[in-house]
Length: 156
Image (cartoon, rainbow, N blue to C red; front, side, top):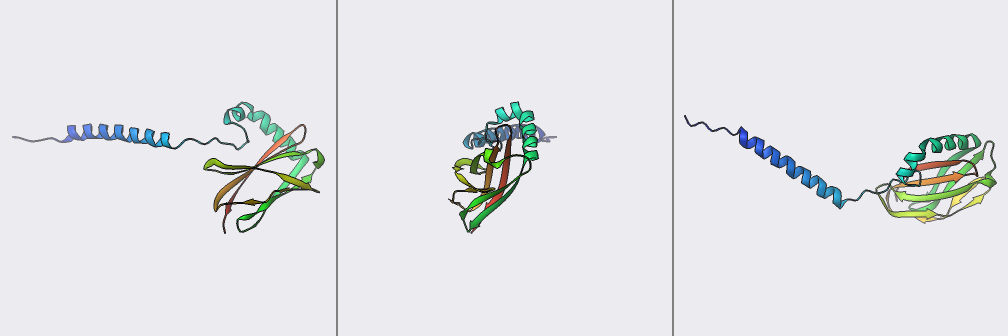
């Protein structure tokens, strides 16, 4: 009897398919660079080293101030308003940094200027493309710092 078995060929073909899939995965990963995560507006290595200090500082900041975020847009153009409520701190001592970014890339990052009007921090006017955006805000008095991240979609 001349009976052929195909299972040795199936095993060899499976191994070859796995090797090809690994090569394709590596090629795709090399063509798409990893963007830096900027949730805390610093490198993830620095955040990893100091996360306990950052969380403690944010908790102390929350005891001093409250924040309400309001985007003020007409279509794709407008600005951002932050209403700051003092609990036990003084608003005059606050410094800020505002970063507007797209979550999938750092190519369109914009550092925004803003001005204080009473208890409001109002950003400069910006023009956005449609899609998903993130706004990172760092508020700091001289002792404590708080990081905020707001996600929103820009639509016409």
